[in-house]
Length: 382
Ligand SMILES: [Zn+2]
Image (cartoon, rainbow, N blue to C red; front, side, top):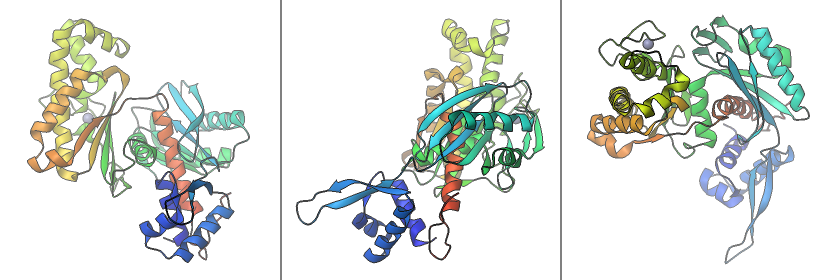
């Protein structure tokens, strides 16, 4: 990594930092720091944001990333309604929209993205990130398998969107994208290694090790929804099995278990209300599902020994009783060593959370490509 890249990385990680703090943190010489800062500043990626006066000596100029230097677009592709945002380089959403679709024709998705870009006009957009549930070849921008969400197999959605918009486009699994957003801008900003478990109609996980996303050999690392956890349930998982975590603790599996006990079908939109009105059934079903979830979380804590585990439940199952059951099972199942080392936290879903995750993927790619070691200079982005 070039000196400029290291300096920029430290400035991104801190809110505001002086050159002398950069020197302490990087171990580089004052002249190397000053020359790197000058170069990155000359293209406008960092800016001076005030000074720090200490009891002795000259005031120290504070530097920060110029968050509005450029923007990225993030798209969360869903079954019926997708979310799209425009984000600055610090993950702040400045525009948002939704688009509905009855089918997922790649060229149509590309048109929807292009229309949004035309509507928000006037911003320097340096990347597009698409997040989709399923197996992704991130290197080629191909959705290998998202049969149950958007009905895709081997769809080169990244190149299709890039060709239509003329903007570099990255594709990522949605749990991975969310983990990246938490690493860069969210709850996990100060963690070195952590896992974000996403809990909805599907269950997945984004794994960050040493501040890098871990995708595994085939891009399926973190597909924890299909770990066998119980006796067969009457709900069939999207993978066809009935004993997976997803067949027990996903929102649809919980709705199915409640429906069975009541003898009437319960739609996801009415799940919270039904659980509220049927406290005995709620207790039994959420306890069962939460206990299975907690056991899997404990396995993750033991295998990866991360700083933290975050669980992001969707609205329908963001319920205290479910969280309590999961946390209790987690605490009793983790090894004594992990009990003090790994914290378990539940994140609250926000409207932009998923699309901002997708935008984060494009932000990360922008910094990786903008800062190159081309003769020691910071390459100017397009
Ligand atoms: Zn499954």
